[in-house]
Length: 331
Image 1 (cartoon, rainbow, N blue to C red):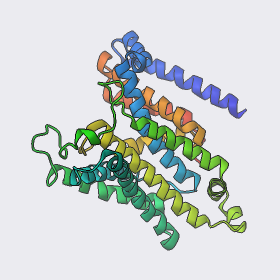
Image 2: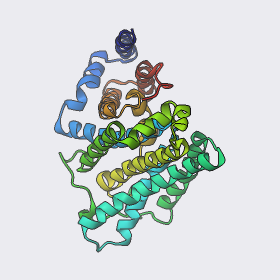
Image 3: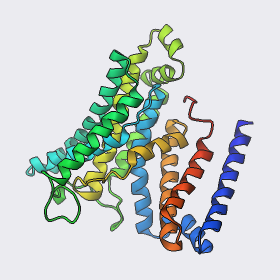
Image 4: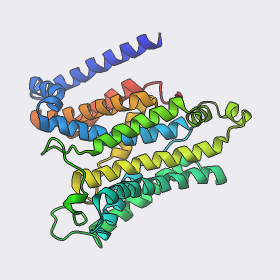
């Protein structure tokens, strides 16, 4: 019955999505064509699709790790924001380093920044009983304006038309694939991270104990598992993956830290995790689906006169249909 309900829900979602597009667009045929085909219409569009899916895979996996541990990370956007700045600052501070050493260190610095934010929320819950949903949200709300100020004032590149830091040296940037698309070699790092999360979750004792801690903390506690430790650890890993997603944007897409450059990947990671129902094996397909949908809707908006607000409504229709009844379930 569950599978039947999901099939009916998806069918109803598609019918409603197409119906709304036909009703609100002055050029419905063109809108549907762009919605369904634009992400695959050219190497440029396909590269952008994979680039978006790559960072969403990381942020979605990060949110899923927290959810699997019984926590909820609402600070992914702030973690990604800090994760995009720290690698750039490191590479600007050490311009003469060897790329083979400095690029991994820079990526690790982004993961460290996001992980530190997640750890603070996790340890506050473990030691003080503070709700990590609130603390992670408030931490992000504090970090984002600070990072934006640093980029816009003391660190700003006066020669850039964007509010951004100076660009890092070309040798420190991730290799671009399918130029002039946004795709870089960072997509392989995202794939490796997703596969590693799947392996750890399904084939290691730590992954098993983390999932048990999230789905049945009382049973886990009676079995001798340190539930609070796994919850704080889950928040730390969650923040690190979101920070790494921001680092990929800084080193792969912009070559600098840009104000607002994370483009909501922390928030969108929540949607990806919900679409995947927190399951590691579904994170990559969910990220591809989300990226395909948002890119298709963006193209339909530009080409057919659909308002930006309506495109957000269409996304909401899809996500509600897919995630209905699943937010309270474990992995």
